[in-house]
Structures are given as structure tokens and as C-alpha cells.
Image (cartoon, rainbow, N blue to C red; front, side, top):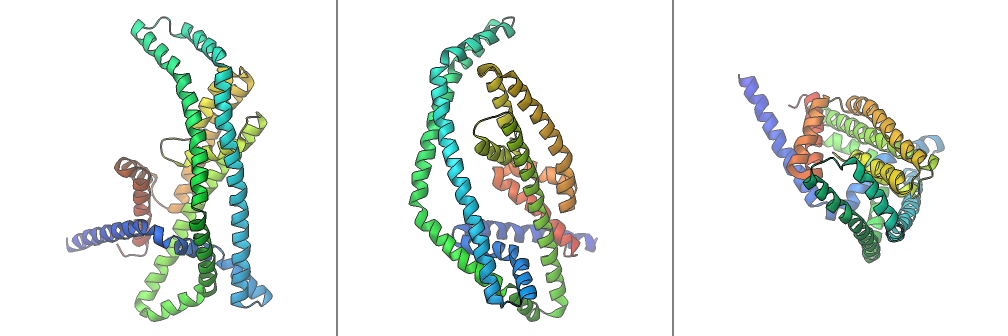
Length: 351
């Protein structure tokens, strides 16, 4: 009985400490962002830095400087290319959607009229409701297109206004990454020397286990997103769908978010090509590709995530559902990492 009560106390204490750390971390992220990013980046480039030191007999400071500059150059080039292309495609998508609707409104209404034969036998009240919704649909889509274009332009203006802050964040992150990378091995050794020997092993085990599980968790979902992104690019290139980059990115993001999924892009796109463009091959190709990609995801996701986390799938599903109902995406993050850290502390016999 005492053992059970002690275990319950440990679980409650863990939950309270985790909740406090979670709230403090995200509430102060505006102030600590450069240092958090720098720590993550330093851990990423730690091994390349050690490789340079061991194989080329380069000083720690010079090796850290080389890996930091190369890493940031690579990141900045990728982000610059992605932001430029996404912005261009987003603006063109908004403008062309509005132009298409205004030029082809009669064809769209004809296509809607043809749909009537599918619901003529329904109750008159239902038919009236459908017709009202369909007639208002075109206006709504046009307004949304205008709104999206306006928001993109205003976002760009807002982005330009935040450039000084972003430059400051980049500069502080770059400098801090260099210092973290240079000293990370030495600092870890010093820290372990300060901690009593009977506790240092447990702390080291927690660090190793946390790094392994969190690293595997992030890599597993990055792999899933990457697979979805590549599959979508290939499908859209094969069927010559416009705005490949932005649609593929939206699909990848939607694929990782709860409830949404790639169907939010694939299904409307298939309907658009079937009813409005009259390109039946592309429409059916997109629909079949959606089914195949969804099946592939359902097969690979449980294997990749479960093997990386070592957590029962039901626990992950419960964390997703409870977090989503409690506080949306932030609730999901809280609950998923609660399950992850509980598993870590359980493995090192602290709970």
C-alpha cells in the first residue's frame, strides 16, 4: 500500500513539475527564443564539429565557427528560396482564383445546374437549402480569394516591419549557437563533475533517454511529413497541377495536424478538375492518388511513431484527443509530451 501511495505521489509531483515547466517555457519563449534555437542547433551540429576536430586536427573554436557558418548559410538559403516561391505562388493563386471565377461564373452555374438531377427527388425543403448554399458558394469563394490575397500582401508588409527584430534574433541565435557548440562537450563534463556521483548517472540517463526519444519523435514526424510532401509533389507534377510548391507544403502541414489531413487539398482539387475544368483524367488521378497516399500513411505512421517513442498507440491517441478537446494544438503538444516525458522518467526509475 505504501509503495502504491509513493508511486501516486511521484506521478502527481511529476505532473505538477511538468505543467509548471511547460507553462513557463512557452510563456517566456518570446524572450528566450534565440537561446532555445541556439541550443537545438548546437546539438544538431555537435557531431559534425567533433568530426572536424578529430579528423582534421582543427581547434574547437575554429571547427565550431565553420560548422555554425555552414549550417546557417544552408538554413538561410533554404528559407529564402521557400519564402520567395511560396509568396509568389500564394499571390498568383489568390489572383487567378478570383479571375477564374469572374470569367467562368456562367460555366460554374451550368455545372451546378447539372447537379440538380442528382437531388431532384429529394424533399423540396432540402432542395431549396442546397440551391441557396450553392448559389452563395461562388460569391464566398471569390471573397475568400480576395481576402487571402489581401492578407498575403498585408502579411508581407507586416513581415517587412519585423525585419529588424528577425535580424536581431538571427544574429543572437548565430552567436549563441557558436558558443554553445564550442563549449557543449566541456560544459557537460563540468556539469557532471559538479553533480554527486550517485545522481549524475541518473541525470545522464534522463538526458540520453530524453534526447533519444525526442529526437526519434521529431525525426519520425519529419519523415512522415517529408514522405507526404514528396508524394504530393510527384502527383501534382505528373498531373500538371499548378502551384505545386505551396499546395504540397499545405498538404504536408495538414497531414500532421489533427483531424485535417491531405483530403482538405486533394478532394476539393479533384472536384474542381472534374466539374469545372472538365479534366476527368486529372480529377480521377488526384482522387486515386489521395487514396493511395492515405493508405501508405496509415501503414507507415503507427510503425514509425510507435517504434520511435515506445509508447502504446492508445496512449498517443488519448493524448491527441484529450489535448485537442482541452486546448487545440497547444493542448495536443502538452499531452503528447506529457506522455513522452512520463515514459522517459518511468524508464529511468524515477516514477
